[in-house]
Figure 1 (cartoon, rainbow, N blue to C red):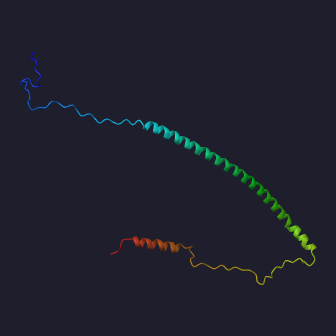
Figure 2 (figure 1 turned 135 degrees about the vertical axis):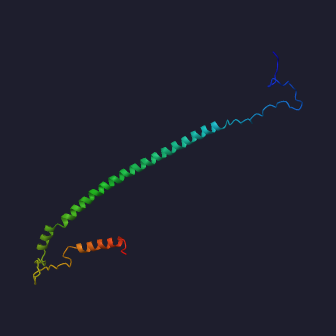
Figure 3 (figure 1 turned 45 degrees about the vertical axis):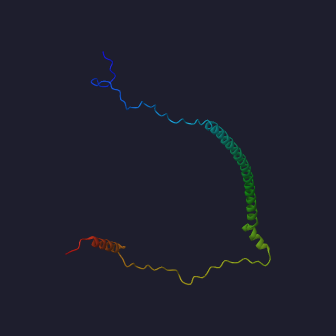
Length: 157
């Protein structure tokens, strides 16, 4: 068995004079290690979490203040509603019709007015006026339908 290294068995091995030796492949540029990213993100995350916690506590304090103010306003509304009811009752008792009638009878100089009914000079009467259309308006409806059908009818030659 022969030790041939050529790709084609018929060719003899030749040394190429003008060929250059194989160069090593250029390596990819090395990436700079970004070792500062992870600690920065960690610190940024903790700082933002702390800021959000502080904001949540401040919002909770504002909510507590507003809730207390709402409770005070509800109590004031209830108190004012009770006062309104008492004032309405006082007003109704002060201006009661029977009490006013008794006061008017007791006060000298006030005379009871007698109800006056106007005298009826002539009796009321009504006159039924006949309508022009005795068919209840069907003539107008049929005229409208016929005019529409004439509009869409083919022209007569």
